[in-house]
Image 1 (tube, rainbow, N blue to C red):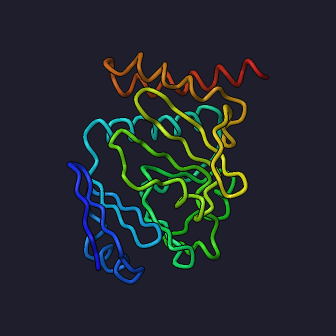
Image 2: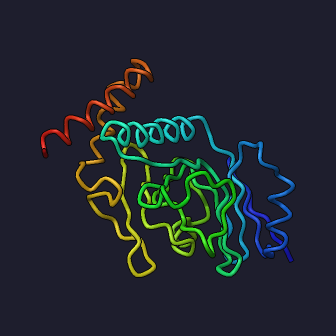
Length: 212
């Protein structure tokens, strides 16, 4: 029997089969503001709040700006639905990127995680208190790195032995003190988005030049 739990910003459905999950995804469609996560029969449908969406966009843009600032190639797939039936796991990240595997997937519009690599980096904004823990889902999908933002703090996690371990340095940008980008974001938050993006590019370039 299916059971339902409700919060202001999410609905949690229990005892959902994989086939029902697929049907719900089809029913929701691709043009929507909600995010879904599925794990072993539990499905969460979340409607992000404005603060969540702001930091999703700002930090997602920062990742692109850092890459461009240091001339690092990448591919961005936003909130694509990633799923593996065999693993009973699926979700839609706040944003996701290919860096190490960018050349392998470039130009692809459809993915099969039984053959294709998962994103190299996923972004999670945790301001909306998601009821379903995303980390075990990401682990089953095989995503090697997660950036998690919550209440002014950015944490970096790497997948090790099927579990995520918090670390100081990013696998994607090992040469950069990534957590410092929050200082730049806060400094320019009330100035302008364009100025913020330019500042992050300059920050990345300056950090790399000091190393070189």
